[in-house]
Image (cartoon, rainbow, N blue to C red; front, side, top):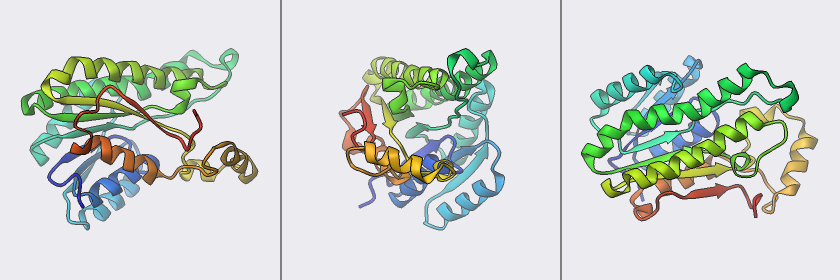
Length: 248
């Protein structure tokens, strides 16, 4: 059953990792996909071809969601190409980890800009379209770290906690127009980035998780399908922890 048939989604930061997994699963569910990437041109082209081969319409855009004007231009381009925007997934994010005593101002500012300001930029950019349509689903990617904090990640935790407060506020503002705003807080998800880590460290993390495994990008993607589809028509302002029980 294709739960997203006829819907168009924008997914930021989708050339790899969780974003790529979301794009692939959305295409399987019949969604047309506009996705952004920052520098991985070849990976983006390969993904675009892969998604189009499934029979949906897909297009990659090199765009920096942390830049206000670029976010506005992106939404104009997507509307011109696809005609509608039903789902926005703010997934783009970076880390610049360090203990607070060693963290430079630039490392704090950059993480807030890319992780949090991008959510403001993109939400503001799609708002008018969704208000006109009187429908829309905004899904913002936070993290377990945004819920409980983490030593050495004060900048990242602040950005991801900010996303939760922002999303709940948007849910209150736009609910009367049938626009929903929800948050997913992934736990330890195994991607290309985690594959570079020491296997014994990763095993230690897996063992500390009640489900005894790391999550896969599809685990996050499936939660996004629920929040993007009409199955969650009465769900807004919520934080869904997809973490194998880490925060239990």
